[in-house]
Image (tube, rainbow over all chains, first blue to last red; front, top):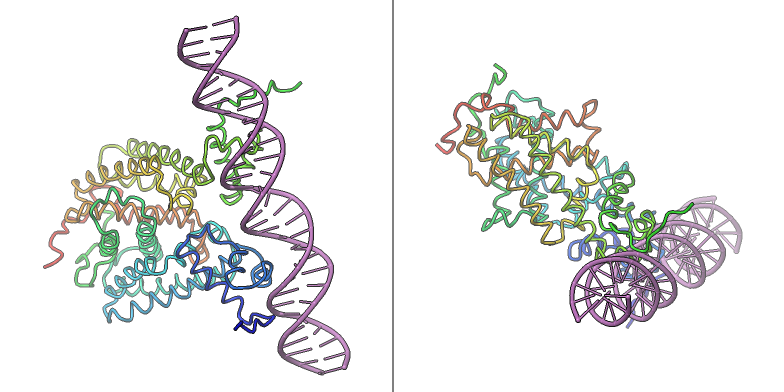
Length: 212
Length: 212
DNA sequence: ACTCTATGTTGTCAACAGCAACATTCAGCG
DNA sequence: CGCTGAATGTTGCTGTTGACAACATAGAGT
């Protein structure tokens, strides 16, 4: 009982992306090959070229998809956190860590050289959308008392960079020996708390005038 | 007039590492191949295998060398910053950014999947040494009033992750459109200031009792 | 039915990693 | 001085991969 095996796959592009996510998740990103994907999906070795010019293009597309999910994931975390802007922003930071842990394929793709050194337009757009979501939330948290006197753009870049750094620390296991006996994921959550307190009531009462 | 061309290169291992750093710096890390390095150094295609079992081993060795330089670079920055522990720690953070910018070959190697997913012992050791340098400096800054009430390990992980994240933001140019008209390197320095103030006089006067 | 375009296949080539067999150098030791 | 073994470098081979070209099939619109 064989599959009809139509000449045209019908949904090859998405099938390749899905399989790529699987492969990356459990064999790492170096184990990925266009030919391997073609084999896994049951298609000839040159078929992927119709949808992705080269490997970089495939990874960029995967990253683009990843950023869309990432944005949704982070937004969802904020929604579930209630109405306090600082608490929402804290929840978003935690969700960054959780996303990196639960979606390693997407997250490691974000940082892969083939992706970071690429100027693909749709990729940049999806990344920009993510940054804008963070930016809005940061502005609201600031209005609620978080680092009231800082430059908004710097503040946003800071929190974004710090959360990203913490997530990288968790995904790359390095340094795990110096943090002996500590759950890395738990450590990351405490880092988030250091970036943004879990609630606006815990913001420093006033931090004006640092330049006296 | 030919070069004597001794059968034995004499210093092949280091020559390969040096050439690798060059190639990565101006062609990116994916453009690196053992055979290409062998050609560039003027040696047969299988010669590198005597010194590096495979590509991962070479990259790990390069990263190990990189961490040694990184440690020296950061330590040097602290020395030049004077005696105020907070100012010293701030200078170290800035030096992380500067290192990433001035030594892109080493820095991008640090984050390459082939390196991060590797458990090479000498690599882990050199990385651990770097972390310990940061740890000591963080402890001194804390004693001088910086985040006096935080868990030292969390504090160190936080600052390390944040500085790393900022450095990544600068090396991967992404997000540069949302930070339009801003010098990324300058932005990164302001981020450092948000992590650690430039001087202990600027530490929050007291930040005890956040759990009232 | 006819045609254009999207999609998939087969065949080919160059580059590369990895391995094995062989050659040369060098250091130690009689 | 000459032997021997380890380190280092070379040549040759195999399998995988990315990239390309030429061709085949399917589907949509006229």
